[in-house]
Image 1 (cartoon, rainbow, N blue to C red):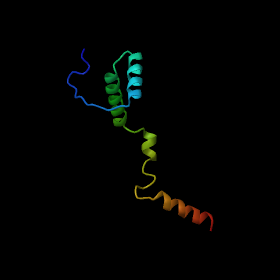
Image 2: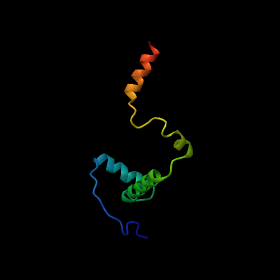
Image 3: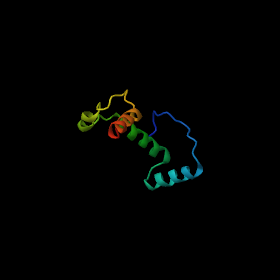
Image 4: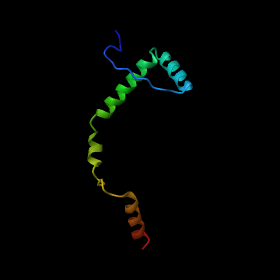
Length: 82
């Protein structure tokens, strides 16, 4: 099966030492550097698209988006030391 059938291609400049490592690492896994990177990209996309765990959802929204951490900390220190 041609893994790259119907896929787009890109060119990514890499330092020679990184490319050498990538080729050796992917070869040790029995795949090409291109296929390894394609799988990593797909894995990252799938990971980021997963729904959040219920515990994380329950904790989200505790701090409102407009809250300044620096201001909140300064207010805390003022109260603590007054």
